[in-house]
Length: 116
Image 1 (cartoon, rainbow, N blue to C red):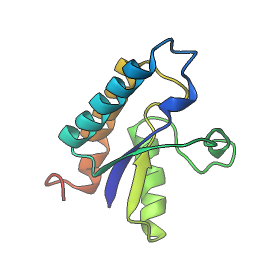
Image 2: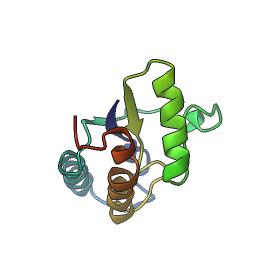
Image 3: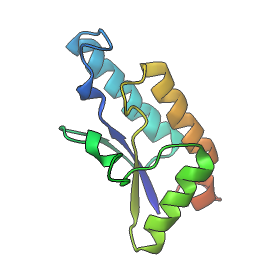
């Protein structure tokens, strides 16, 4: 299974108090980090993803919960699973920490020998 990062950072420009230039610098750093951490892709959302939680389409939680949901998708035949580490407007450093946590504790469960 391939894993990607799905960014919805554009939803919170005022709340996080940054310029558009700073936003794009952060996005670039996150995309580069995703590549270095072993994710297969990096996606940037347009809008309308807040309702996914209510519909239980996305998973939030510790590495075991994320793995559980990813395995459900895998068993259903999906080949890609997108992580949304900045959902909810997390500060940039916490987004990177979330990506690192997933790379270290979730991805190895699907690719024990490293990036496929």
